[in-house]
Length: 601
Ligand code: COA
Image (cartoon, rainbow, N blue to C red):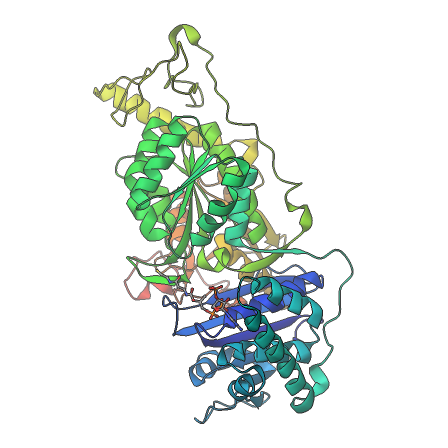
């Protein structure tokens, strides 16, 4: 059990990709959800399919969780590298379970108990093959922490049902051997510590699965995509499930074709989307501009990873914000949203479709690897409580002289799908007049640019986005935090810890990032004196947006380690800022290449 919270447990399992680390951690996660626990996980793995460091952490608790935890109660490591890379993540009083074959001297720390376990030898002797080594680990952890065995066996049977009978038989032997070893050789003071919780079992899903489910719930007609880590799971889910509900799925030859498909489908009046990661979004930028120019709705999910270029394909980062907001030639308005939890990954996709259609422009949904691939529990009511919005509608109020790009108060024009008699019109990437006819005189470009951007102003006032930001913490506080995306989880915990230490702090996490929710942000900024902006990017992209929009200094806290923030990293920044309270606010500095991720700017 964690020293901090009762009936809470954080386990970290580490080894090489290909050793079945994910299978162990996912099995325990799914069983914990069936026991009624809330759950949050984090996985980090190499770009290679086999070999290279792989780790998954799971944290379960009686209370809702949106962060996989700063420190682990137990680390199970299959090799020396896994121990060295993860030893510091053990909390004081934690335990290390490691492969007994490792001969190298191991790191030590007072308060950490270490137990060698012959995973390798037991797998060969008891299960007859090395592939079942992870089952020994699963059995050991299940026995130590009191996970029920029967549901684990059911999960494994389901997982390996397409494999030969021998695979499950060997794995069952491995699981039993792990349980037996723990009973015989490991201290029993951890045993039976997890209690079944009252209430219905919870659903457990990844952010990517939630996003794909959200797209189905929103009535997605067509998906076009090209696989790319860490977003591919969205595509895989929709490849299987979209045709089942009558939708069309197409894997294209690249991301340019994918967005072109989305654009064509949207033009024909279909609800269309794609999902990609940063490199794919870069490729899509030209046709994103065409969607803005032709005023067509579309939803693009960008599951961010470390960049630029191929960067860190399997690691998390939040460095595509400015690309999402501005990445285009010309002035190309688009909506940018960022969910903060797995549940919200579903809800925000539904909202993205609603806004894209209402304001006839592309909506980009920014997720990140940590959110996309983390397992989290969600209540089973998730689908019944979705925000409702009407099906794609045509609005042809002016049949006598249909103007597809008619100037209106909100900038939103009547949209009638192609092929409707009396509503023939031209759609082109060239600048055009209200009827869509190419026209490039200076006034047309000025008026139509203003018309397209007016829609963003109308959207910012829309009740659909009012109250969308999460606000929490002390009511009165001089220190404020503005964060976005999956950083929400560690921020909530840092704020809780700071308040427990007597430091008043409050936080605002907007889900609408473009246009910014001015009403909520202005009131929040006016009520604080120091503003910390923690982001998983090097240059402080949200901080840049806030500074340029509201002309306020920000205290940046930037990390590009490929892993989520620890709550304590944010807490330390809060403490540092609290200690400097009363000192005059430093003058804004120019961003320096190395100092950019430190201090106030
Ligand atoms: N008996 C039989 N098979 C087992 C097993 C056991 N005891 N334990 C695990 N396996 C199988 C799993 O079913 C899985 O097979 P599947 O992929 O056909 O389902 C496979 O072994 C890997 O096990 P798993 O536990 O899922 O993962 P792992 O911890 O070994 O890590 C990955 C491997 C998943 C991280 C790695 O294969 C991967 O996909 N890397 C990412 C590659 C990528 O995205 N690159 C980016 C390109 S830009």
